[in-house]
Length: 334
Image 1 (cartoon, one colour):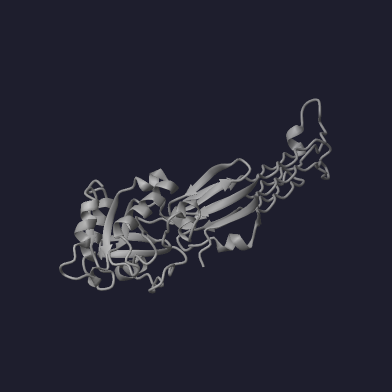
Image 2: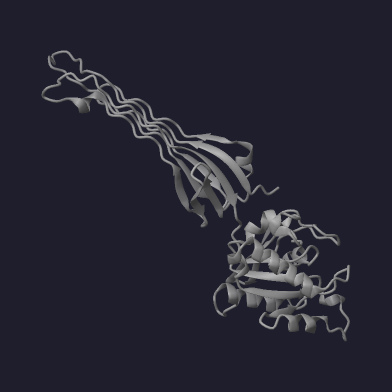
């Protein structure tokens, strides 16, 4: 199960207090202060781990605390610093401070790490407070408090291409045909219940990452259906692949279906709607030779490339993948 949002509390470790201590040794008549500094508190550090693909770990545990620093001791001994807490999240995780109402980190690259909450500095021991007028100081520096934050983690999948379309447009079948992904596919709507990623190998040196989200319906951007919660997962994609069912079982209009999805994309995000798009007219294997449905769709979309395909038979898929490669890598303007 994909968990793509979680709210957690993090607390960096407090710094240890400095020590108040005086040197006491035989044959040393004037010992003086020798209190050591406290150790620093551990920090909370987020790392984008390619082996993570869900926020399940954080949905089940809401409080995360790093170790405190230890207090200093005599003979100018420093306290041990607290260990940093490394929290591993999927690449694409956005970190938002709920109290500030700000996005404070975007772990959008594999291996990227960000210190989210800094550990407190250790306090100074009384050795630092010695002066000509204060030979036996009893002052010490208290350790600083570690930063604490209430956070919302939001996972946005990182993919080159985002697949969109009405339920039963054939997105899952297409993804399964071009990659090793095994999305569930059936003849009824809402087969896909959570986003799926697939890696497409065009050849030994070229790959594309595709993200399939649950089918959108009219009103999705306003919260209707399943797709609204997952539209964020194609927010990072470079190109949109819009699958249109040319021969829907309910005999609805493919052109109207196309415009329904475009409206939902625009209502959700103007930036998302402005991304380059190509259209795959799917289920060509169900048509008859003299049918002009494809021509009508092309005529309705004069500024958009429309590729006839069949996810079930593989017909026309290769040209679509080559076009996606060009768009993703900027070889051709959308």
